[in-house]
Image 1 (cartoon, chains in turn red, brown, purple):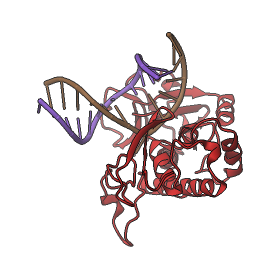
Image 2: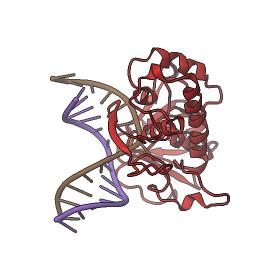
Image 3: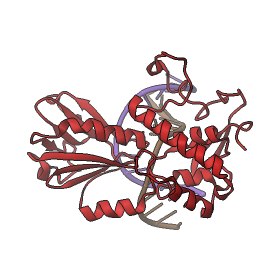
Length: 257
DNA sequence: AAGCGATGTTCAT
DNA sequence: TGAACCTCGCTTA
């Protein structure tokens, strides 16, 4: 269940493994090159959209969590579950990678190739919204499909798509080139702010809450304005459910046109 | 106990 | 456009 915020948070959290030689294994066996990283040091981590890169000394491991994958922080001596694709551990802590789409050895060229295939990442401070805007003007298809296209914007997933389009008052099925500059600015600002919040909170919470409110107490169902909501949490209108860009989309028929 | 769906992507048709 | 891949928590019976 990973949109870009999850990966950026992981890139940060996994930095606790930087330093000592790591124990690297693949209890499940499917990451056949695990042995080659055993006793090697982690030099750094990086998040590019939904892609996670682990820089070892030497070597690069690329991880994509996909829909089901996750990293779990556990006690280093706890016996790994059978389906652990990769375990990274120090004397103090272990991280288990479960059910990823990808966990493989990459070259610098592979990383460069990925960079060339990804659009700007709202979580990258250097990201240039003008590049996205230019692409949208020529994009043939709905804005809802463009936002999920990783070559247009990197890191956006189905939840942020729904919430951000509500923020901008734009219906997901609207043609991308019909989105006004003002609407795009709201989309981009909203992506930046909400995804950054997602990194800090470790989850996607888009509803407004009172000052001092404990947001971690919100259930998943309570945390969003339109995504999977029966009614729009801003105005109460019944939420429209449709398919855009091959995924289920949610829209407020009153606020999104 | 069984079934369903999911914050993703790629490949085949 | 659909199936495959990767797994599990929540819903339904």
